[in-house]
Length: 265
Image (tube, rainbow, N blue to C red):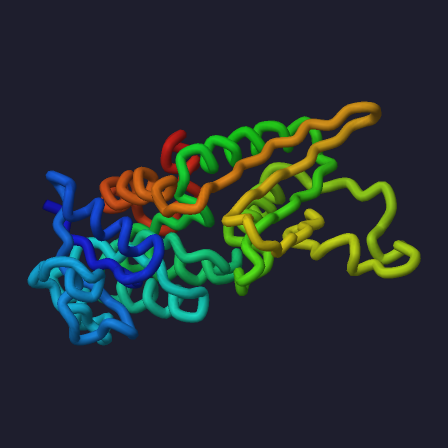
């Protein structure tokens, strides 16, 4: 049995992941980390029957005896959590969004030095992974693209982790060719979005959206749009996260993107 420590186990996605681990035959919910529910039984913190798992505030304490840390917390905490796990010889799965390419370079160096694996994805949905894989294929032939990132009005980070990951990984495939430099825009250049790894990204924050990401590729007289939409539950992220939990023990360093893991790149 692979023993899992869940950071953010009382959160929206973290709870769904913890419940799926409990229901699995080959994964064990070893420990849980959380701030608001620290010191309480995890089941009781969920408003359910006790599970005999105490929610810890101390990450290092919770990591003792664990094989994998899965983090669904906040961008402010995720990198520190991952480095602490790596330093303890524990593999890591990161579902928290907002980390940058530079952050992942730091994590990769630390993980390779420690001989442990890290699997990170801005979106662990299987369909989002397929959308990203398709976009990476298209970018080889159509370098002109922009990304539109939709999320709820209260989402604090912009762009979303899904959009940031997509932009940074597209940059590894091809360089976006600007017909006109954004700096030459007349009026309000900021209306052209933010340049993330060379691709303009536009973040829309409105009620009714959860996370939707589209990349628009264009050539003269034609366009191709690849879009992924997520609904209002964490269900889409469960299967991909469990897949990563089962695979990360065979990795060394950072594997970025669920599609990379699925396609064995």
